[in-house]
Amino acid sequence: MSESLTTYDFLAGSNHTERATGSTTHMNSNHPSYFDSGAGGSIGSETMAVALIGPDEQRRKEAARALLSCGGTEVREYSAYPPTLDDVPRLLDQRNDIMLIDLDSNPEYALELVESICANASATVMVYSAKADPELLVRCMRAGAREFLTPPFAHNTMAEALVRANARRAAVRAPRKTGGRLLVFLGAKGGSGVTTLACNFAVSLAQESGQSTLLIDLDLPLGDAALNMGIVTEYSTVNALQEAGRLDAAFLNKLITKHSSGVSVLAAPGKFPQFHATNEAIDKLITVARQEFDNVIVDVGARLDLTDTSLFKEAFTIYLVTQAGIPELRNSNRLINQFFTVGSPKLEIVINRYEPRAMGVTDDAITKALTRPANWKIPNDYAAVRQMQNTATPLALGDSPVARLIKQMAISICGQRAAQPKKKGFKLFG
Ligand SMILES: Nc1ncnc2c1ncn2[C@@H]1O[C@H](COP(=O)(O)OP(=O)(O)OP(=O)(O)O)[C@@H](O)[C@H]1O
Ligand SMILES: [Mg+2]
Image (tube, rainbow, N blue to C red; front, top):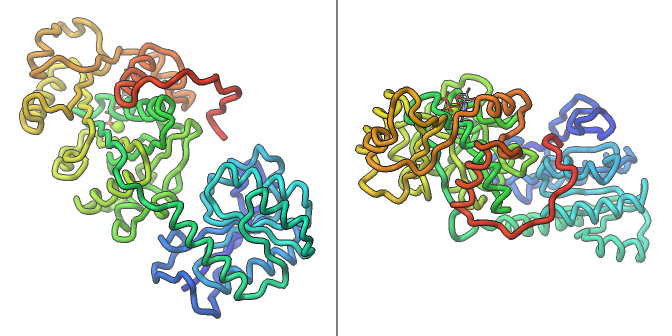
């Protein structure tokens, strides 16, 4: 199998993932792979992602060669330390399995880096130093480093370190026994407000619950959840569904983009893909997502072709998003009668853009059409929603009537959280 090696530079621009050299080199391993699953590819399920941070080029290249000689790794080289510890979260967004850090270029700062990474990520941190100084070694271990390597890097030493890191990765990522909550947003009709509500609900639930939360855009091919969240994504739901056979937690984690609210997003593709997902692929995606996240929120748009998937069978709650217009109420009535047996505890009806007696439809008529009272009425708030779109800032981060109601929806799922001290300096974009 081949491993990829890419060089990045923290100083190359505001975004540290910009390439310094602009080149990607594929190198063939001369040694049998310790991890080779045959999956191949840069986002394969078994490949270990390594961030190699080393200002000293010669030592860094030597370390990269040693890593690649063991097989099963994708190595990203960083030719500088992150400028400040505040840049560490951006580095961690890369979701590497291993961080290998050069100590000698600036030992004190490198130790702070090790400590900060270990405190904030489950990646295995390894360090290397040409000085086999016992005091430095002890300080590294106290900071959380798992391996202390000394150049020249012996193949066996590096391979054994990788085996330990791989075993640790498996333990850290062991799937949870029970699945996370599955919360599905379905529109009675296109344009009902599914994406607006699903995105803001995800942000609110992540905040209120403090739990890991994933938003999946399954409104293929043209879902626009990422646009509503104000994020640019590299991979999409289609990548996950196309490779459902080898989809696991590690693979899923590589496909998602983290929003600064803490919500992870698996977005719809930017391009119009010629792809039809099977129900099995969708079920696999949902299973893996629920193993990895406490809350999985899915925007299915107005797609009714998914009713035979686990989305409908295993959902904790299905939010049917509708409006008080005649076409929406008519569709809602048909949907409820066909898919939700009387009193189904799973179903919660959300009337979006609600205005009392708007369009001459009374509350009684609405209840009759819906066969039951709506669970939630979200006001029509053009200004707040427009502001959200213009600033790419989820409503849930503000204090509009819509945001307050969405927060109530989230609290009804996870319960009220004990008061937390207010976070200072919250930034929407990292
Ligand atoms: N409560 C609200 N008040 C005012 N405008 C809203 C509200 N909810 C949604 N909108 C607006 O309605 C339009 C449709 O919303 P949205 O894209 O969320 O619907 P959707 O059901 O996801 O549509 P699609 O079927 O295209 O996926 C958007 O322009 C959105 O800004
Ligand atoms: Mg939508």
